[in-house]
Image 1 (cartoon, rainbow, N blue to C red):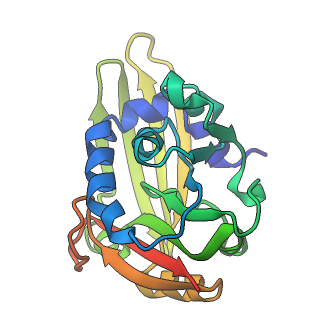
Image 2: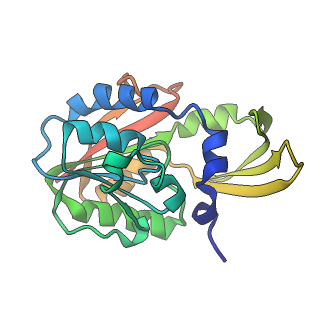
Length: 240
């Protein structure tokens, strides 16, 4: 049976998250990239690059940037000049040579989709691709904030769809059931997202077991320091 993430990242996903745009990506790149100035030379990887919001901007700064994503639908939405820099692949079988990358980026909650063993395996694979002193950026939800302020139900309406969302937290697993109704026909589609939430301490322990040491934590895409009420938890790690 297919996993939830194999079939979800398509046009309906983009309709539900329209605020994930180039302006947000541009703020993140221009605020955060200067904090990683000591990275070694070499290619950069935007892992789970989707429709290429960050890939296109990184490529304007570093020509040898490339992306990997599992969704062909999203990859086909990458602007034409950059589409050839993207590969369709599963991060569990990361097709990258060892010690070849200066940096790996995982933007917008693209880590935590698997079970514990596979999440750990992804980190180990990423670590192996990095050069000495290479950087790994992981951008997650603020786990503590989610626990304190989880919205259990809401409805989001767009011109074409109605999204009814139900969320629950069971231990460290955040589950969201989405009922998608097409307004023109009344037809429905059901999707379930499952995400393993990690606390900052858990992430640092996970990273340290793969020779990645924490350099900096941020709380948003403007480069502000992390605090308990920050909307994001962005960890910047360096390979030892």
